[in-house]
Image 1 (spheres, rainbow, N blue to C red):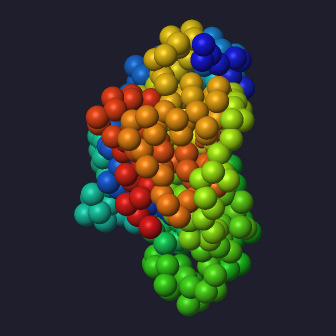
Image 2: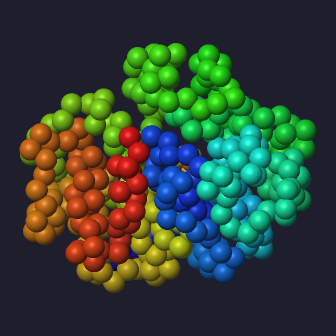
Length: 344
Ligand code: SF4
Ligand code: SF4
């Protein structure tokens, strides 16, 4: 039976929408990703389940949590009510760098209006008043392909002025970013011209990214493919039920640490999911990629003749196949796979 133990450290993903579509995004977020935001009732139910499973602190992420500021405050209130500490809130800082008109024109401002023309500074003050104490602000070349890096830097100044704590993820990239125009985003070819021809591989290596979600494209470009028979094994993927750095998405689904595109309602995992209900999850958890291969091949999956750069890359494509509508496997988020491959 699939069942989680005590939930240690995790994140609440309040949405999947994002004004960026970073090439390393493990959750395949983007402006075209399924819209929506975690509602107050869903947040309350997630808090109840987390609390009952021993979880006492989380971070908030997305998507981009600040796309719906009132929604973010509502989730924060529910966490406060439940006595669950919020370590930090992740953001790419876009909202500190452009006005609301630009966001509307870009089609990224969803949810109820955030108190009219409320300024970034006023938002920070309200966030502090509601118990938000720390921001994790993304800044790196992959983000800078979409978000001019002046925006996260401006947000750091506003944090200092208002008393909001923050940390940059990742500070080490600031030096190379200083060679770019901070006021605009930069295409991959511009990055290659200014930073290095090997910009993609260099940034991925310095980051130490996990090659899941949209990063499957990076792995395929940077590493050679190997035949399937060399990659697969029967080693159970026990990390699927790891309770360290798991995420709960806006619909109340548990997302395993690292192995994105799989999701099971948290309520079921806390109680113990019925055997046979989630065949892909079970196959991987019990029999590793050998078992996944057998499951997918039985439904018509044909692996690429050229092979894959890793067994996790194979796993992504086998699950992508299984996520198709004919297979009726609710544990696989079809949108995740499509969005991963849409932006390269
Ligand atoms: S990594 Fe990029 S695309 Fe993904 S949620 Fe963060 S800002 Fe959005
Ligand atoms: S093979 Fe699949 S389930 Fe196993 S660790 Fe890799 S991505 Fe996760």
